[in-house]
Image 1 (cartoon, rainbow, N blue to C red):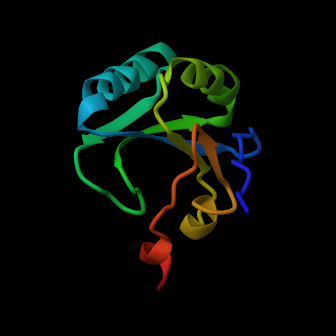
Image 2: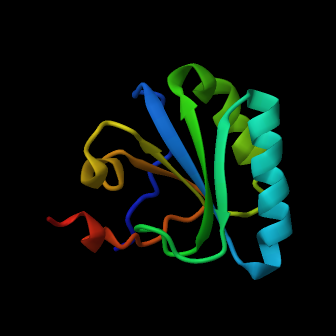
Length: 118
């Protein structure tokens, strides 16, 4: 049975958006992250050309707040050009943020949650 992809909801104070990409989409993903940072005045992390944390693909992290959500998420959905994006809450509980409060633009991917076990 396929699980339904959870769409982002604006019910938290702060979020990360992780833009996932491969070598072939690196340039597009880099410019997308850069444009998001400039357009919405958001903090954009490094472009990781390796697996980092629980993420199953190369990624770039964008930090944003609930006040940015209603403008940023629709823009990201419209401009991601097929890239998968994990949007998760920053609640202070990493495991819950990456499971219970994990939302997707595009297909949902399997995260490596083993890094959260103490």
